[in-house]
Image (tube, rainbow, N blue to C red; front, side, top):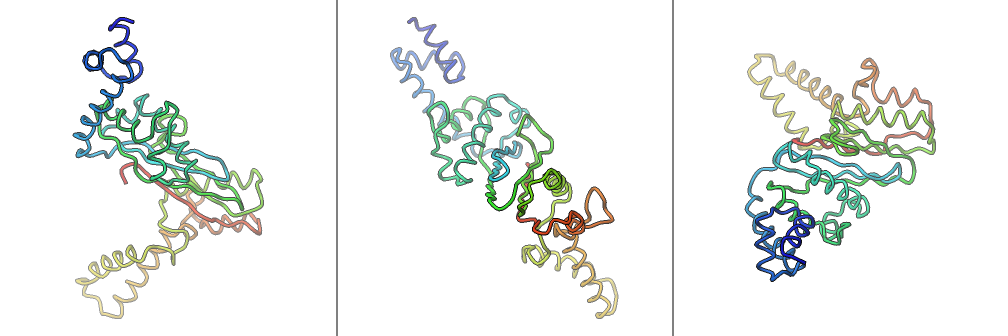
Length: 283
């Protein structure tokens, strides 16, 4: 096999440029496997220089079914790369592995991809090939044996790849089309309304305290009597909790009703919203 043919095969196998492949073939004495290893090592060197840059773009990818659903975030530097075919191919396979490993990122990093290489090695090779910092961000798996899951994707890039994703888990024995339709609508509601918790008493206390500080600062110089200021503060905090707890939010599709009203109107005795997860690139 001539060196030119070997260079061509090396380019097909690694996606690296002609010059790098030609040098690797010469350095390896014509051994393709060694040449691939040489490029991989050089790729690590190139990739490490890029890791100090910001990766604020990217995608979220969903995989699984109605009993086990996962989402994973993969970040890059530009929206252009987020639509790159090699990037999309990597994140889609990564998403399936993430579902298999229940969003355990330590396991995921060493999981083997279809080319026989680990996720970590493939990530390094992709960084070297594309020329941008790429990182694996948040991930979440929701298992649900007592009901059904659904999801919603917003600003879809391709298939199950998007800029925003919502997972919803319902606790119910009813798997009717009515329930499935509600779960999809609920996912869309969460995408638009971005609730902080299922119920007001589940909102993170740090968030509550911060909001209380903002309200207190707002009323500090209002000149209102202390008792009146306390009542206003209480009212503002109650409203904040109501607007940020999923069950008491105004239903996006019918704002005069709350989410909990819609659940009651379905008249399904065992229906409960079990869990949800919302993730958006850039937030």
